[in-house]
Image 1 (cartoon, rainbow, N blue to C red):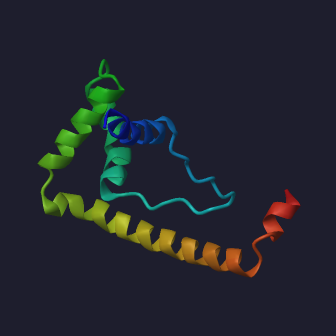
Image 2: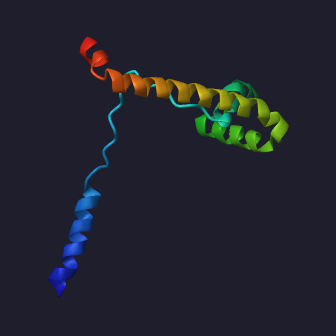
Length: 112
């Protein structure tokens, strides 16, 4: 019986040892859409930095997160609208990229 109990442990250990593979990046692929929070942080990062010059990267992130939570829906609306426009842009670019890949997938790779 001890031998049978050892087998499942061994298989689990083997699976844990293998690193997860990341998918390869496709050259020329469109960038993902940014979230409303990311547009907000791009807009406010410099302001927060000037108010807190000694704050490190992590501290700036915490301050930005706290500021984002303080905003009401009316103050967040411009960033939400910006994110919606960026999502449309990303979807359009992805659709165009996917059709380009289906129609002539090898063209770009041969040129490089």
